[in-house]
Image (tube, rainbow, N blue to C red; front, top):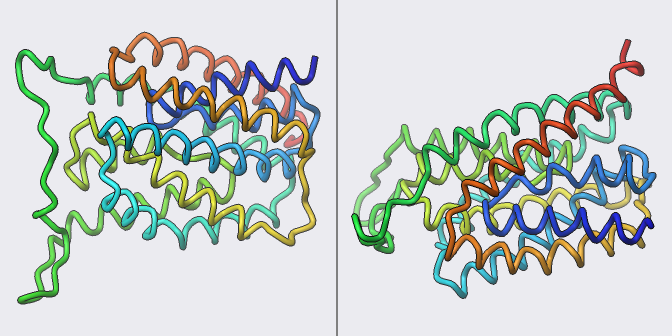
Length: 275
């Protein structure tokens, strides 16, 4: 039964990460805690394994489909590293009920923002406007032949990337619901590339956060984590293909309902320990 739960949950996580560029990892911690019996500290660490591997597989699939701007994703991810390390260290100093309470609040925020993000970032019908790969000749900061800085955009990238890193390190989530809008606004990527490129960012931040947690003495149940990870990674490939070929609005609506339901359940379980 435990294996079946891990496989089903992993499929949902992978589909969302592959198709929407984020959101699925928000389910990993509740699944590990309530369905697979791990403690919150164990779950947030195990979630990073699921997120890192699944995002990597999804990023490779999206790159093969031509939907990833690797250089921009890597640059954003490197900026987020500081936040990921700080978040991972802060997580070790927080009581487990506080972690679950913060996670429930985050899920409510994600459930609210996902439909908004999908509405704002809907794809333009190819018949109305051809999709063109954006050029890489509009850097935010240049040093040659002279120094030039688009400082407002640079500040947006710094603030958003740091926030993503903090969330990833602290709660074990990928932060794709923040990464995709940041790539759309700060780096001017079209939606067709933002979802795939966000997987590069999530891979970097979750890997760094996991390394920062190494040696903390908190080890998840690796059997459950591996089963969840394998199912999520395989589903991420399918999700990347869905993103390339289909309208993902229905998937977003269904996933939003699931996130809000799990958020309510997590809040009910966490609140008694906080009061």
